[in-house]
Image (tube, rainbow over all chains, first blue to last red; front, side, top):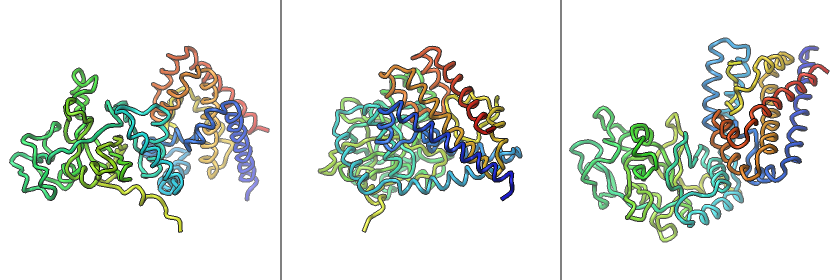
Length: 307
Length: 109
């Protein structure tokens, strides 16, 4: 180790010591907040490092390297660390934490339809994000549905392109097919029935965009934002989640349900089982790179099994 | 001041004097700079949150923490804070300056 490098290492130790002192001071001065953050497994530093921002920094770091910045090596290390963190996050929830989480989800999902309180929402978003390994949130880019907690009804298949018929669909034909296309248009892209289009129709949600307070005044901006927006329905009663896209608007208020699910969502997510009775928590999936596949997820299988 | 941060952004980034951060990083060898940067911002994040929680009425704490979770990267969070507590931007700015001065002093010892 050179003299300079030794001095640099010593200074880094001093810096770490300083940071520890600042954290300790924070814990003492803001004991209540600090305890709450501990209970919800959130570290202050983590506010900065939530997934979408981590993705943004990877892009920014890449751009810095392109510019030949002196911090290029630091940027690369940051990208590497990001990947490590993403892998690490998959094993963040222990069996005990999982059981606690499921209990809380089961109690929340029976609350009156609407939203959780802020603290509860933050806790559940964080825990679910840790469990699933990707970010889920009640509010994304300033958008929030009228209900996070609600009852999901069963919908019919949707026509994916003009002339599509029920027999062209793979499964659950007993659900029938709606006479009109979905509120967000055909599923095909440039007239092509791509694999993505097929998947989008299989796993779609109907959400009540039409009742959003700013829908009438701002639907030109809102409609493209919601079209095929990825969301996740959490069904704690069966410990299953389903990732799907927003494919239709509805149901109407008088139906007394706050969202709808495609035949695949309802069947494979066991949304109307005896344990669930349609009650779900519906959250956005923050997936700017479209990496999260659609379909059901068995929540209990995400937890490392202890022997 | 407009230099991009090699970190996920925060609501107070535009108050940070990046020249000072660079001069702090100059104390370190290339291999240590990334860790040093993370550690500096760990301190700044805690100091900023600390002063916000001190200055902000307790009734707004849950909302603030909730917004931190969703919008820590958005400057609009600072606007919200300013609406609840006019003048808080200046206080945050002061904390940033004082913390960076303490760090400079520490590294010169």
